[in-house]
Image 1 (cartoon, one colour):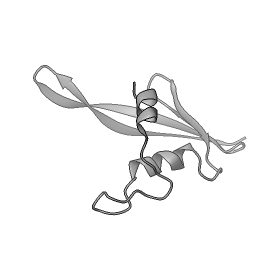
Image 2: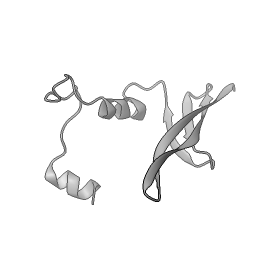
Image 3: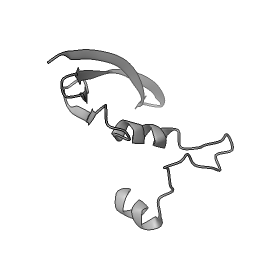
Length: 95
């Protein structure tokens, strides 16, 4: 039952008064090597994401497709497996 514990730092934009600045935060990961589950948590120990890293087309693969959704520099062709939402989906998901 080996486990590997990792951490990394990221920043997010925050506003204070009239200006903006960046707050630094940490993400923590536990790689559970006996069941191939990766769990990502925030600084407060809240689980952000947990997934099986040996499954093809897992949630992290899907997130990466959405982050890098365009297949060319002109932003006219979507990467394979990525589609535009229709109006009904937009209204349901981003209400």
